[in-house]
Image (cartoon, rainbow, N blue to C red; front, side, top):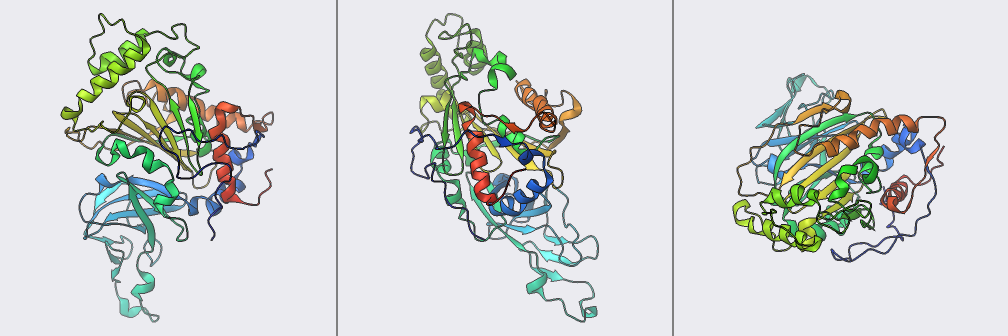
Length: 440
């Protein structure tokens, strides 16, 4: 299986963190709604894209000891990611090679060996078949080389574990392009999980990715945030597969009546939260940003964090990356919101939304939280997940309604503007994997 050709419209791994990527040469043509609603297109995505890309499966910190494992479900596949006895990490298909039974339920755990609950076949944590009950009763034999657990490509970056179902795909480092260089100063491998949630949503996985790929929706969906975030001056960059936006914070939007000033929102949502005395603060927006950055830097010894490689923009703003096809990073100096948008195995109008909150506090005692499973239709199910959770609530409220609207006979295609260039690029990348296909 051949790897899709690089895009001639966007650069590869040559641009530095603050260097702008050239604007991609993409036509602003309608995106057919069938890519979001049609089962046939979803099957093409599975056959030609999901099985050929690197996918974020979990965190290394969740499998610290030999025998620790986590599962990763994508489409019809379930994969076991296991810490091996030599300290390396391996991945195997989570399926007994006798009659196809799943060996482990979704989640995390520990196993000295893997035993099938159906007929008792046993496998080592390296996937090797150890024992088949009544092996002598199989006239054809029980060859371990054919009946051991099937391996899956596995690699790590920044404390994240990635898997790939395609042996011919590029390496993980090649696949990630500029992202490792850009995010290296954050030392994400040392950050800790403070929240772990999976939410079932009645929408296509791309509907969810799209919602976080632009700041155009902020003024209508998150109007209350305009007092301290600048949706108008957000920067958008498109690389070979992945994209980025730099979303300025600690400064009001030009749409807000307090534009150009230090608003109460900046004082309360940022400066006061990190301990800045704002009772007599009279500085400019630039002064507020500097005060926030300097105060956070002074917190480093207590947190065990290293801010030395971060510039002031990284200290204050959201460096927002989308790793194709389905990972969203909201990267801040103190925390990182990681979203993964997984497709439903059969229904293109449903998906699974995974949200982990990583905090930059290597020296703090933060117990690993249990995973929560929610449904967006539970009403305000996400409001108590984190302080300021209304931001995510507002996005998730929209998603099922967008999906329902797409299914209307009145709606035919997405009509995108310049602020939605990352969505256009996402589709361009997707269609390079899909190849020959006529939308309809």
